[in-house]
Image 1 (cartoon, rainbow, N blue to C red):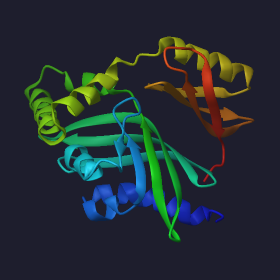
Image 2 (cartoon, helix red, strand yellow; image 1 turned 90 degrees about the vertical axis):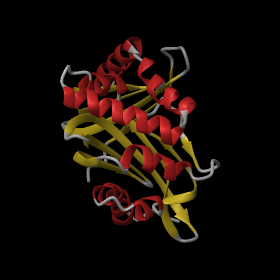
Image 3 (cartoon, rainbow, N blue to C red; image 1 turned 30 degrees about the vertical axis):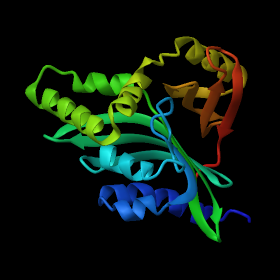
Image 4 (cartoon, one colour; image 1 turned 180 degrees about the vertical axis):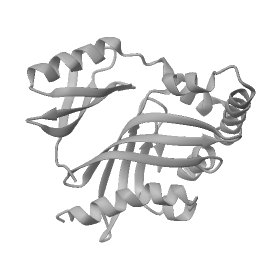
Length: 233
């Protein structure tokens, strides 16, 4: 079935809309029967094979917070949408954390209805944690409450794996991507994000905005794939 650009964009844009009004049922309903959520890429994925995993993800990271997606750009490629966004999260008691991110939504039809099959959020946990490490009471309280809530809803193992996503530094991969983009004619490179075995970036190609997603082999600087998204919405 041929993707309808407007329908694909509407599906993707409804995700932050449901998050903004805390509509759990509506948000969960965006996903197909078989789905995966990687948020952030590098942490343990949320998979449909695990009962109620998507609902636990909502309860852990979305329900207790106020979240706004400040979207700078959308790119559409068939059934895929890539977003250049900053995720603005307000944690109790009023602490605001800003997370630069690239998001990809991979969609498809399921019984004639368009659904999200994969959502991957590329962002770096370490800078986010550092925002919470300020020596002020509100930040200490916010960090402790969020981590305690995470341990209660996810369990110790999954919570520690989520926190452990911060160990991916990827300086060599970052440099490898920048060198490759220079050769490929990508200019104005900004917002370079290392997440798991991937590196993403924003830039321009022939003056038009593009997003880049590079996947690397484990423990290597060898590219497994590099895709450029340049269909501006």
